Length: 264
Image 1 (cartoon, rainbow, N blue to C red):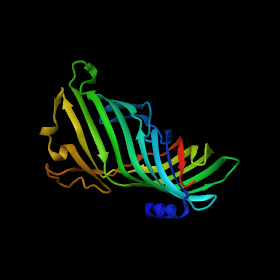
Image 2: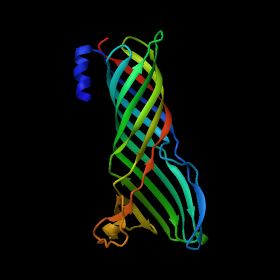
Image 3: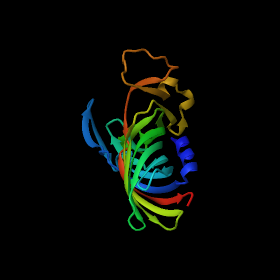
Image 4: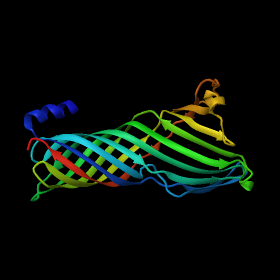
């Protein structure tokens, strides 16, 4: 599609580039529950939930196929804000922060109309997440009854790998400042979830002492599978196996930016 964009641009001289940034609010449900497990009264509270809350950055190029239609290829980077939550049981107390990021290619179809210098438009595209990750940081103690004297534990986990597929839609308008420069603003919708292929501890300390060098591969790395055989014997030198999990990046947001029209 990129090759098509440049070749058609040379013939029609109706190519454009646009760049923008914005803010988005995740539409995933937050976690807020309590339960009894193995005799422990666990309480989990989430202050902010979901992986779709954050800032989208947009860079796209395209061509107009006529007065009202066009195609474009976008490169979107989504930087998620951290979700904070608290987990307390009879055996441990931990504070967590988790956030996700995604770099996507977005081939899209665009339709627009001209209303006296203001051009309303709609865009629909396919999102292909090619560089995705979810990072979770934790800080806690193994003795919640006496936090000051408990052994402090900190760690950081990163899940990554794999490709995410979804959709993106937008409704917006352009305001022409000149023949070559326009401002745009749009309401944007992400519909995408991400299933990582692997994960690993990036940090792990107990009592302020780093533990990663002494941890076996199975204890600090894992891969996500659709089916997990818990009776399978896994070598200490191989990654562990965990059930496949999905992270929801659905959101709605507002993006503003500038558009540069070429050949005018």
